[in-house]
Length: 254
Image (cartoon, rainbow, N blue to C red):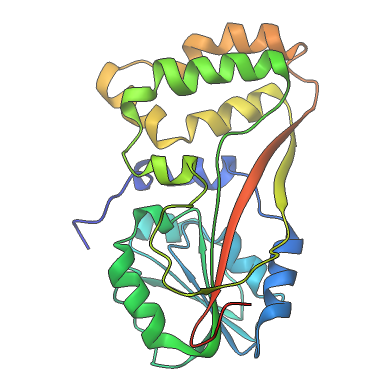
């Protein structure tokens, strides 16, 4: 596992505390589409945000990630089992899983190998759901500063896989019978300015910039963010569109 693309282990604690949570309605809808609810697999689970949410709908949840540091930050749950292993070669039994969930991680996978693994572990008719969120929005003034950070300052520091997130996973490998009429969801957090800046610092590109230049790009732009935000203690709504693709194994498109 030493050769996996590890962009987050070095700041796993920060990542766990600063990232937004997924909407409960997403997991409820996915569970409704499943034929059984015995076992869900959260592949590339990171710090377990989606893993814990899935325990509300499945008897057991298996959550895997190649980063032990990320899993160290994941909360325990009696119906949840974690494993440090790559998504492309997991330890699950064949034909054992009702839902495979990939939250903000599919772009890091060897997608062809992972899809082979999905076919191996999926029960007939099981679901694969891949989902990602891209750029947040607060207000016109804040978003202008955000774009300066995202594009102008950090543009060269984003890994190439980020492009798959930016295009909403439209061009990723997805050789499964895709469900149509999937609802739309968004992530939303009500944050103060320090909480918002902590999220920006959790980006892999920010950490890469810091390592290369010895300075924090978010701190450099903090005065501009503060001017756009207003009172740093005031709570603003931060919103991310959520892109979701869902496919069913061994089934025709529906």
